[in-house]
Image (tube, rainbow over all chains, first blue to last red; front, side):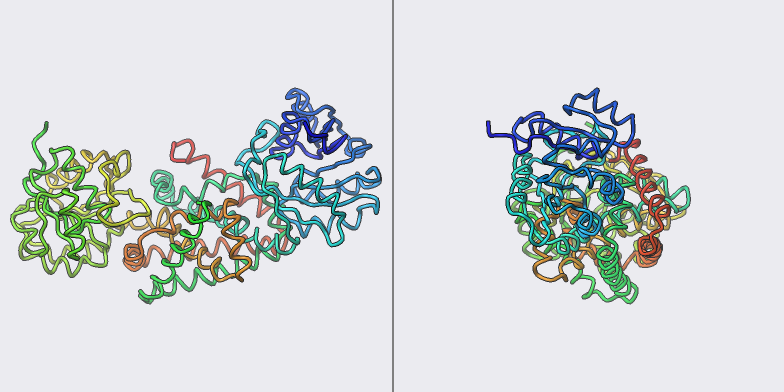
Length: 295
Length: 295
């Protein structure tokens, strides 16, 4: 077995993602010699103890990070600023600080100014998840075959970046690197806008007259159902994603709305050729996914 | 085995749906004593002959319907008016005329005025399909466990309605009945709007800069992928659906757009409670689907 990447890895937050990292670390043995878990509520801390997925469970984030050579924030991105205020003075020199958040510009904004010069910040975003949350929802295979995107800030230490990259490779992920702004734009269209649409169409259906609403649930297999799978996602996490990737999400929503209105106008005025072109483009993108085995 | 429901069943159009009906009739034997298939192109007619899924193949729709006690239109709804003009004078007295179109108000508009008084019109819409089309795409199990909605016009003969209902039950479907206007409103939200959104978001992604577009395909698993499955649907069929359920589709698009803009506005102004409420409603609808085993 390879040497553990970290002597003492501290997970701030032990929900779906954090508890899955803890489970991989436990299962493999070559990620960290010891895993320290910190969570906000006594109930979660107690549950992590019962599950036995961490070597130590610590209620105080400042104490949790002490002596850790790796710290990963696994809380909703909206909680980063207060968490960082609490832990920054206690981070050990040489420590690598990372996270798993879905928005990366906000991570640089919230963490970089408070990061001690002796600490290396290497943000990461594993593109993995389920509609479930909490420490019981995690599992060691969650990251297998999924992408993990690293967004190291300019000038980041290559050794620290490689440690985090290797951590995710050992979790079974394919590691990619890009700058935070590109990440946020790409995720806005592949993930954040689809979720915004999914939440919205569920609300639109929910506002219909009772009779129609019942029928929506009954006949959902006709397309609606595909849009609801991702609508079951965690409330706090998604509120924070929308608020922390505001500019990119609003830009993609504006583009999408213009395009939807243009298609609606073509429908109103019976412009068959325009409608056919839009449908054909959908098929083209779909074919692109099938060719890349992403379908 | 039960007596066949029809002596001579004529299918106008032998694509995914028409060829699947032909296959069920062949497999069961109790749907029609003979199946006559009509298609527009010589290539399709030849392919149907090669597949051996019909007893007779007839290029001329007027000749195809002669002597048939059952006729089912299986062409895109935009083709109904010209097809009906061609076949109406040749429909046998006592014949039951049905269809499989996804819009039902337009069926009454296009077929009822030309329906002879000796012919019973019983429109139907099997909620079944795949992203493939053409006579090779069909299969006998397509309708198993799926809903089929009948929209008989006021005053329809109950015996004729029951014959079509029984045909769909023998295809394995669960038969429901509603009026055409309700059908069109329900389908607009469960199927037509989701398809409109799916086609649109594919176009929005396709318009992005090359680099981002590549990334969309690469990271599509994060939500985008769910939206593209239904975007691979048939161009002619969907153009006709949008154009023939115009009012209901535009109404649902307008409601959806208002709701999306409201969520966008809440994101812009940081209204966390509003955003949380929208996400929570998505989860509620999703739970409703899971409870109904429609997820």
